[in-house]
Image (cartoon, rainbow, N blue to C red; front, side, top):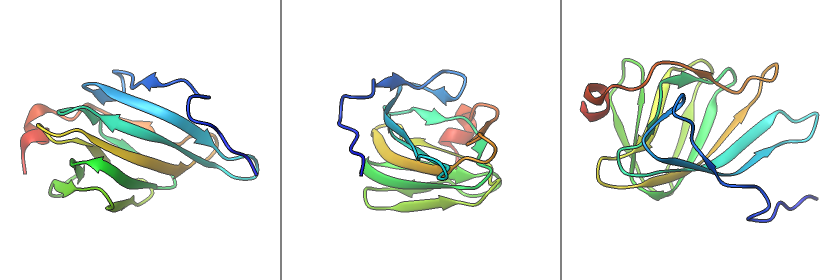
Length: 132
């Protein structure tokens, strides 16, 4: 058994090449071989969001606080709340983040494939973010 204590891993600010707005990454974790499991707690300030991206083996989000929006490419923007679990299929192009007026936090979990957990794409435009 391994316990990683809160504060033992430094808090990171989400880099602008992957996020729009203020995003905090806490307690990133990575499974020990043979596991390829990777994850983190991600907190989005109001208006903050990921860029469009995909995951080679998919991704699971566990919403733990606030209210957020998620959207798959070509789909309708959905609202998520604490307790909601979102699963994205392998290769599914999507984004997720906070609403305009409310912060949102989730735990993001995904498997790595050949050392890759995500392919980051273009930013979500204001029109896409605010649209339906």
